[in-house]
Amino acid sequence: MSDRVQELAERQAELQARCAAQRAVVAHEAASIEARFGTVDRVVVLARSTVLNPAVLVAAAVTVLVVGRMRGLGLLGRVLLLGTAAQRLIVVARKIGANT
Image 1 (cartoon, rainbow, N blue to C red):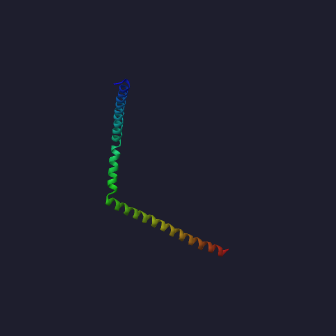
Image 2: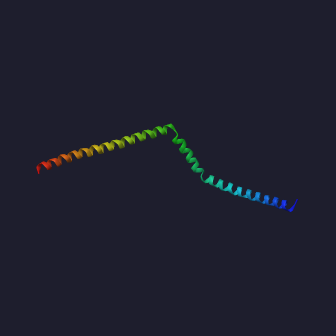
Image 3: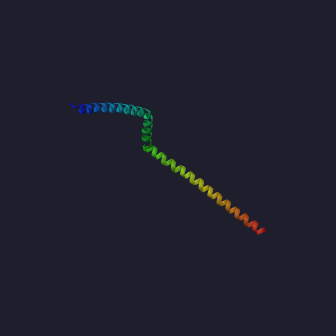
């Protein structure tokens, strides 16, 4: 072999060794990250399976409807209260205006 071919072969072997070392480091870091997020993955799987459960979906819909009605009834009650108060205020204002 010529010196240039041998030099290129050595360079190739060196680069392949460096790549193998870098792959090992990246694999180690990936394993470390996976280990840290393993708990998060389990929680996500549990949450996903719970949320997609039909009983949970029905319970959530019923809760939204009940809370929505309660808020709607509360709002309706406030509107009626303010309307009654406004009517009384108008009556009082007319009486005061008629007396002067």
